[in-house]
Length: 397
Image 1: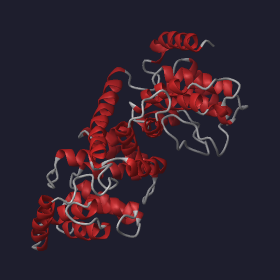
Image 2: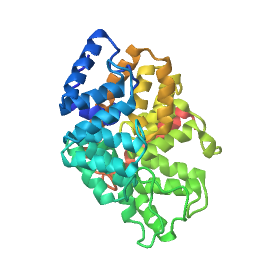
Image 3: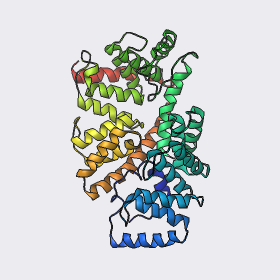
């Protein structure tokens, strides 16, 4: 049985997974665990803040006692009242998501802030996410970057991924005219598919940057032509820009290019279905932290689609990492858990930790070799052309 004491590993992975794992995942109700629960309960009853936190974990995860989210919240509240940062973080998560208590976004954010101010890394990450998305607090990109940056500097994977996704969008926003009526709300460098049309001036700037090898601008143009946003809708041009950007390493473009090969209804006259090729692009995108790509891969692994061998452990890992930010991934994960053995779920959780580290390493490597925006874009154009030719030859197009 894993120790109930907070540890670097716990802080690293439970930020995304602890409160969504099935009750028995961290162990069954063995005699040893029941004894551990009883001991923890005794210390908690005597006012020990660490024991109160751990008792909340027991009730949240079903460790040695029947799972009871409301009891978990009650014990975390006692621990938080004594200034224990991890308990404050768990309270924040509970209020934001309405787990074990009535949902209260503002109160959840306030607990995240208290925990973050005490140096709790997962709380820094989630506070940054709330600032970015405007959850329970007014959206503020500067504050989002500040808190995500603090968490990422201490190795938090989710924060590192968020910063990477923000980088492209903020780069695109810099080129947007100051009187623009909207701001992009999608993933890295994506133009909003709905809302006010993009201005001709803005699109002209994006086209110049795209032709110079700017992968983010290429994604912006891809979305513009895909949805007819400020230009005539043209699936062929949209796909061309997504491909150019994907071959330059942009994770958002890689996801959308993969989707075009999997769900090709948006491009009926310009692309043929190729599920294995879709999966290959999603693997590249997921390696850079794209949540939608992780969700897609989880789906494919769980069913053996796209040329992948059915692998519930791998599916569990991808869906676990995606589920905190994706309701669809949460739903898929719930379905998958019902058919997995406890041993398989434990293996899936272990694989999720490994996968998160692989993604963090991939993102770190990418940042060292290509700082984003136009950096490295022109140098990669020749490589992208060769890759495109090889792909077309393989498909016989």
